[in-house]
Length: 328
Ligand code: SF4
Image (cartoon, rainbow, N blue to C red):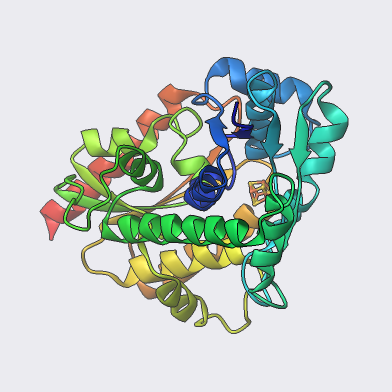
């Protein structure tokens, strides 16, 4: 029986699942993803985690609990850095320890460290360390790593074609990975939704924000549709270099979209209790007011946020954009 590797459908699942999935499958493992977020999963996470944690971390705990009986291992890399001289939010660094000490009766946790801050080639070392848990065949591990990288590249290409990451993952799972296959979500308005993937693509946590906007005839674009070069160029406009990868993605994409004449408004989605989000929101809003008077909405979400309030604010935002258009 193949070894079952559990992957929580939370946090960096929305960024790196194709890499992880391609790697483990090529090694002959089965990959099991936790269920889609539900009230039950969130409640379990809130119960098991510490009060001070941000909502995405609490939710991650719930997804780990969901995998408890379903997998032989849970893959939970200790993410320190995904690019040179830049770092990830420190919550990711301590995640495996927080989970281990708060959730009893877990299967083995694979908590390999991923730190590419000094040398991006360190990634292969991390994956070799993981592969050695399952095989002594070094060439097999290299092949599995290459497979993972190929899947990740396909995923990123699909996102840049206009798919959203959760849709790209679905298309890849169905084998619909052709470059000719393009998404079709035309809209009368185009709204940039700027936020962490784990917030904006999780339909439960975001209260189905993207589909609600589409129902209101809006096309949605997100940071993941932009290349790293665009993000880097735009964030370089700040007087100081950003050493935090996720903040760079938020700022770089917001700066790009605020310049684009095809964008009608920006929605920034933040997590309650997230220091970095409060910083990016403030910065984006200030630059937006200075450069272009584009409609901007900040949505801060936590486990108590009510759907009715979000719908009212979205409707008011879209109405306001339409009035402005009509008045021009
Ligand atoms: S960036 Fe913010 S929301 Fe994300 S894990 Fe860190 S504190 Fe939580």
